Length: 268
Image 1 (cartoon, one colour):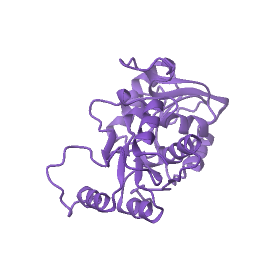
Image 2 (cartoon, one colour; image 1 turned 180 degrees about the vertical axis):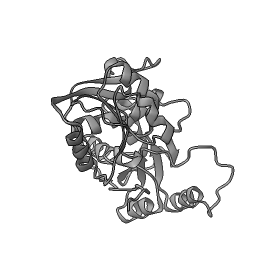
Image 3 (spheres, rainbow, N blue to C red; image 1 turned 90 degrees about the horizontal axis):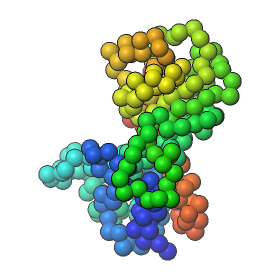
Image 4 (cartoon, rainbow, N blue to C red; image 1 turned 90 degrees about the vertical axis):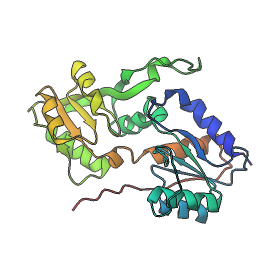
């Protein structure tokens, strides 16, 4: 049986901690590295339901994409969601490891879950990054945010939008004005990636897919491409299954599961 540290060290060998953004809070947020690992539960968010599932399935390590503790806690207020969840985790002796922007900033991380589903070819990082302290075995071309690639065959805009709705199980998609031309070159960034819009425009993408786009931001498409919001949780819903697959391959004798859906957003 492995320790929590073994799982953490392996994940950080794949998605190094030095890749995280300065504002982020990745790493082992709760738990003792030398505790024996009874099982791992991968999830997008840490919620009370996720904790209950971890307990029921004897998983004492939760690997989450979104950090449970984002800012410093001055007190454990059990009336708040975060405080309550932290209390339950401590009582149940469950550790939490966050793997957030270090997974966003690697082509084989969050971006891979989308580029694979869209079957893009000639995929590259949308915004490459140079990071000091990276291990030499990492391919520098995989380091950076977002991705850009090509569909095998150009498709009409409405066909592409229908495909997105089906793949990501979204009942409605918000987008800027359609331009009446086929979609071939696709740029994307899971989660809140609007800051990469100028990069997608500069690289002549036909469409840029991301989430959390505000009203005035749609004007920034400027008729150069179609800006598409597929929802934050929707764009990252396949991260937990990817983490689960990666860990199952490395620790085939270890119990590794994933929590299917923590998205708090619903559509009517």
